[in-house]
Image 1: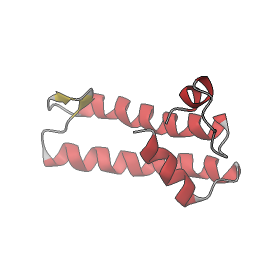
Image 2: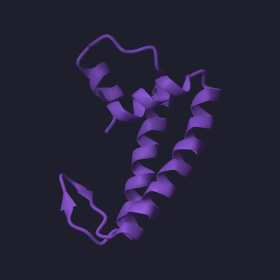
Image 3: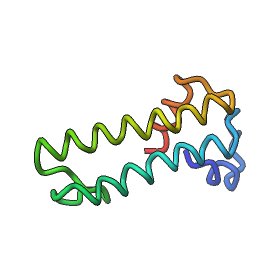
Image 4: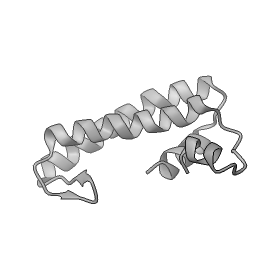
Length: 92
């Protein structure tokens, strides 16, 4: 769930800071921006899809690079890799 929605709806907020949620959002923003640059497939549910095997490989390599880069920032905030993965999945 989005950090701000949690705050707005007065739901109990998780132990993660706004910075942690910002990192998850950064991951999604950066990977989607890259995908939109290299993919030539259709847009499905707001996300562009790869049309070729080369596009799939390219976006996979980029996503792993961005994930590792942002994971280092998350670990510096005291977030474990498992927790960071959960954040990435929950922000999808």
